[in-house]
Length: 145
Image 1 (tube, rainbow, N blue to C red):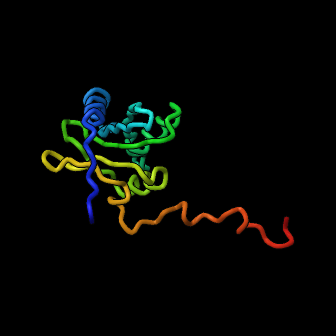
Image 2: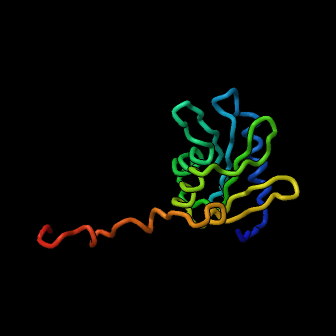
Image 3: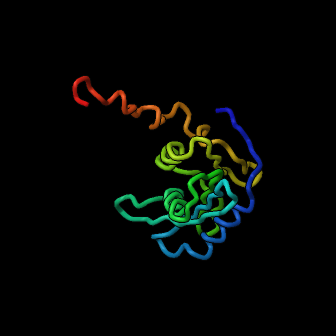
């Protein structure tokens, strides 16, 4: 995997860390995420653990961003509670993040290895949902219009 390293957004990490320390309580909320919108706003969220597979903090932050009218996200990071630091997104989150924001940058690693990479770098040879959707023209059948 070739790494595309970008400047690390330390303000974003601090925002997620603050939420992890102040809002993560008990086993239901153990991860926090922060995303920067293209207009500079920072949106934060926590996971909602549930035995049925409740959403990760990265997915909750997508909904929170949309609710705030932030539809273009630039960078995202997840941080664990109990000072676990930056945690990379799980496979499901990687796929969803790629589908929603193909140019998104993700902060990963820790300590000296802290870096920002393109979401596509975290999911090589990936399935891109948008590339497999039929155009309206392709779904129309002769004589059915």
